[in-house]
Structure formats: structure tokens, C-alpha cells
Amino acid sequence: MSRHSARSAGHTRHHEHSSSNRVLRTFTFVLTPFLISVIICSILVIALAKPYGKIKPYFDMAFSAGQGNTIEENVASLNKYKDDDAPLQIKDIEMEDGEVHTMIYPYVGDLYAHINCKNAGMNDIPVYSGTLDDILARGAAWYNGSVYIGHVGNVVIAGHNHTDFYHLPQCEVGDEVTLETDYCKLTYIVREKVVFQDTDLTYVRPTEDDILTMYTCWNNGRLGMSDKRLAVICDCVSREWKEVKQKQ
Amino acid sequence: MKFTKVLAASVVSTAVAASMAVSASAATKDDAINAAIQAGAPSENVQQLRNFLEDNAAHYTAADYDDFVNTVTQVGQKYRGRAFSSLTEAEQNDIVSTLVNLGSRHNTSVTCTKQTNGHYSVLAQWTGSTSSNGGTTSSAAGGAQTAGGKAVADTGSVMAEESTSGAVAFAGLALVLAAAGVVVVTRKNRA
Image 1 (cartoon, one colour):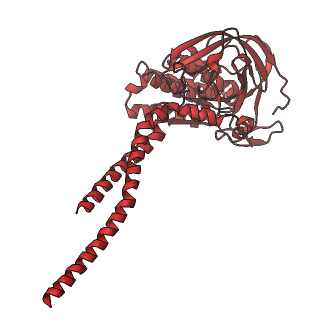
Image 2 (image 1 turned 60 degrees about the vertical axis):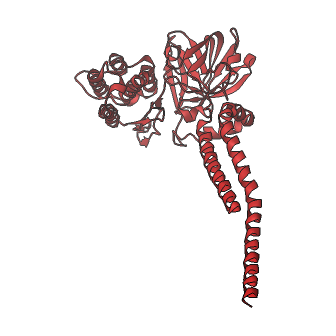
Image 3 (image 1 turned 90 degrees about the vertical axis):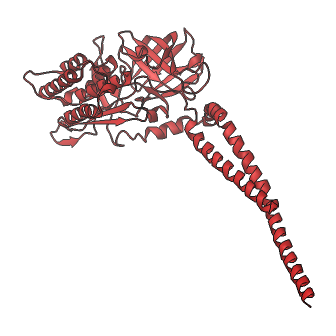
């Protein structure tokens, strides 16, 4: 009797042990491939993080193309640096040649001008006022440590190399560049291209020469941040003043 | 080093443009600009000052310009020859607060914001009121502003280091947990 009981107890324990083993094996069967997949994916992410960082500017450029004027106009109306009802800053000013012309002074963040250089494929590039980071993210930016557009001197405009100034390196000596605001239109001819260190302020400083300096990051032809800048320096050949109808 | 000089000069120039006040002589806009030059402001910052005054000069009186000249001259004499980065935080704050106060004395808002890259963006805006031809007073929306910042801007795409660093950290954690899970499961099976 006791032998039978012992045998039964043994069978029961063996049955229970088999059941738990089955559960564990099922669990292992399902879980292990998942864990291995996680391991493989993690290794891939870690290995590809750096190369992705290098090609991300190209992705950004490819998938941000064609946004066009709609966003530009919407952004212009969302200038966080001024009130929506801020009046136009229109003023008659005596220029360097003694003539009086009407200028519209931009607020920081305002859409200020457009650049065209057809030979380089730069068409209607928007230029905003101020070179703060968030402004540069919207378009090219006029550096307000340079003269207002229309004045004689060095007009300095910066732009990102993966967006608005992507085609800037394709400007060649002799190309025509136009810079147009609501109050004037200037025509320039490219004179030279210079690569300089970002700590060198020579090309962004005011000058007596009537020039336009456009610059962007220079990474030896690749996109991305760099401590070098490519400047395209242009001589002004003509200046046309427009009639500004709305005045304060 | 240079950006700190730019900062100092930018802040000086902007605040100079922003606030003008009284002294013994009747100063003018050109005096204000010359004061910034004499104080050692870099030419690009002086240009920012010129730009600001080109549209806002009429808002300030000779007395305003005098105060501006005096204040900028004092700041220039106090810190001339010293790079902004070599100044203590207290001295840097002293410059910033002097210029902000200068602006506040003359209806001008001067805001200095330290950027993550260590540079300062300086935004100056006239905040006074104007009178219409009929004599009634109306608030102006502030007049054209000027903003100083890094002279040579960063114009390249960020290499996505910030966006991928989080993914890398998460992937690393997942790798560790998954490896631990495999070890645990293996030991359970052996047991």
C-alpha cells in the first residue's frame, strides 16, 4: 500500500514537474527569439547612429523640398519678435550719394528680401532680418551688423548649407545676383569666392565698398556643420528704388 | 575669446543705442556712435548701433544721447582691454545690468539672452510712445529692433548628434536588458 502511495506521489510530482517544464519551454520558445531580435536591433542602432548623423542633412533637404511660399508667408505672419499689429517702419532717408529715398526698416524676424542667382539655381531665396538661430532655420538671414539693404556698404547674408544656401557654392565669378526688398532692388556681379574660418570676422565687417557677402558653412562640399565658411562676394552694379506707397 | 568681445561690444553698442541721457554737452546720434567706437566696440557692433539709430534716432533727445555717451564711456573705461571671457560672472552681469538699466531709463527694452553656444543674443527695442499729427498720443509698437548675436552664424546642419544620442542610449539599455533576459532564461532551462 505504502509502495503504491509512494509510486502515485512520484507520478504526481513527475506530472507536475513535466507541466511546469512545458510552460517554461513554451515561454522560452517565444521569448528567446524576441530577446535575440532586441539584441540585434540594439547593435544595429548603436552601429548606425554615427553614419546616420552624417547623412541626416541630406534626408532633411530631400524631404523638406517644395514647401515653397506658403510656409514662408505663414512664417512671416508668425514673427514672435514683434506684435502682429506692429506698424511698418517707413522712413525717408538721405543716402550716401545725397539723394533721399524711402526705406522700410525690418523688425527682427521679418521677411526682408529675396535673393536670386539663376545661374546657380538660387531662385527667390527668402531673406529674414537677423541671424538668430531660429530665424536662420526659416530662411537666409540678413546680418544686422551689416548695412541695411540699399545703403552703400557690405550687406551680409547668411544661410544654411543644407537648405536655402545649398546652391551657393555653385555661384561662379561673373554670375548676376539680385537682392530685392519692398523698397529697392540691387543687382550684383559675383567677384570672388573665399573660404574662411568662422572666427575670422573680416568678411562680415562693414566696408566702404558697395558689396554683397553671402556665406554658408563649408564642409569640403559635404553638408553639415563646419568651422569654415564659404563666402561669395559680389560687387553692386545697379540700384533701383521703388515707390513705397504706404506711409505712416 | 572673440565672441566674448563681441558680446561685450554688442551689449555695449546695443545699450548705447538704446539709452541716451544727459550730460553737460548736448550730444547727438553721431556722438553716441563715436562713444561706442571709442569704447572699443568692434565695427560690426557699431554698425548695429548705426542701424538702430537710423530708424530710432528721433525718439531720443540730446539729453538722452548724453547719458548714453557717459554710460558707454564709463563701461569702456572700466573694462577696456579685458576680454569678456576673462571677466568674472559678477562683472559680466554688471555690464549687462548697466546696459539694461541704461535702456530702461530711455524707453528702450534691452534683453540679453545667453545662448547654449555661449554667445549672447542682444535684442534692443524702443518702447516709448509717439504723438500723431493731431496731437493725440498713441503707443508705438516699438520701432525697428536690433539683435546682436554671433557675428559669423552657424550655417550648417547639426550632425544629428543630439537626436541620435537618445536613441543610442535607449538601444544600449535595451541591449543590456535583452542580454540579461537571455541569461536568465538559459539558466531557468538548465535548472
